[in-house]
Image 1 (tube, one colour):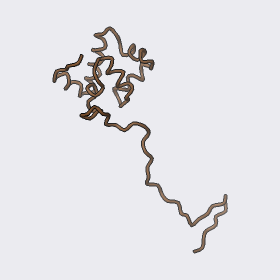
Image 2 (tube, rainbow, N blue to C red):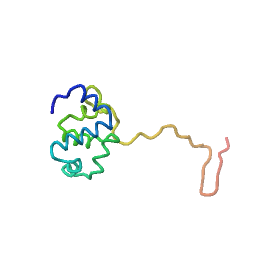
Image 3 (tube, rainbow, N blue to C red):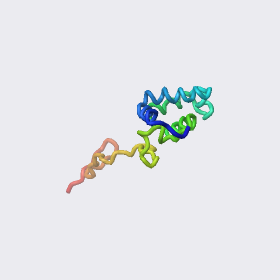
Image 4 (cartoon, rainbow, N blue to C red):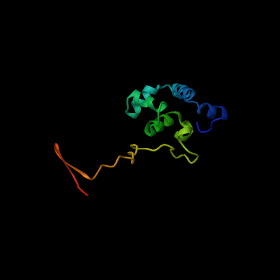
Length: 116
């Protein structure tokens, strides 16, 4: 499945319709999404998360199951060059932390304050 018409491309932009379309395409091959997950070595619930949030590995598994590149199947998650638009990894920590008062030194329950 290399060429898609404009109606199908429009359908893939709607997440609810995309999920039904993917299930239908996999069903035409005589499989279920649960079988696709088992073939990929993951739980069924892991595969279904791709329809809710970004998950690069599962996007690739689902896209391979229907014979499309992930950028075509999930167009809102990729830019025009086919690169992911989301940041992978843990989010950065906030740099706006309250600075500690360096004029106070704490020794257990006793506080010593510098005299300037």
